[in-house]
Length: 140
Image 1 (cartoon, rainbow, N blue to C red):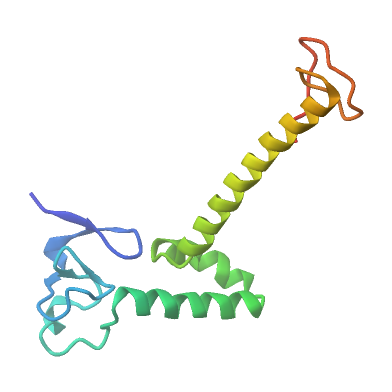
Image 2 (cartoon, rainbow, N blue to C red):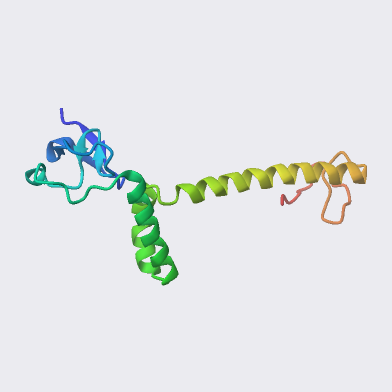
């Protein structure tokens, strides 16, 4: 049975179509010891694609930022999935997750403080009036 790996672009590739990478195990295109960049007949002739994963991610992030700044939404939308698979957005996603958690903690703390200040134990409407059980309350 053929082994299948997921290449750096997030696509499934059969290893029978790939060559073993003997040169650079830290290369961005090396997955489970297979080269996903070079055609098998070119392996061993010197790899012109070699970049470690960090350098590849940094270069691709710079390219994405240039596309974004030049308002090339056609290319941004075409390659967004590829950039995401290569980890270009990882830092931004981590920041967004931290910000969302901080905002949720602030919302809960602030809601509790507002309820305590109003002397209310239950939900209130936007004017601070208590809402009867069963009435819809809009979440912020």
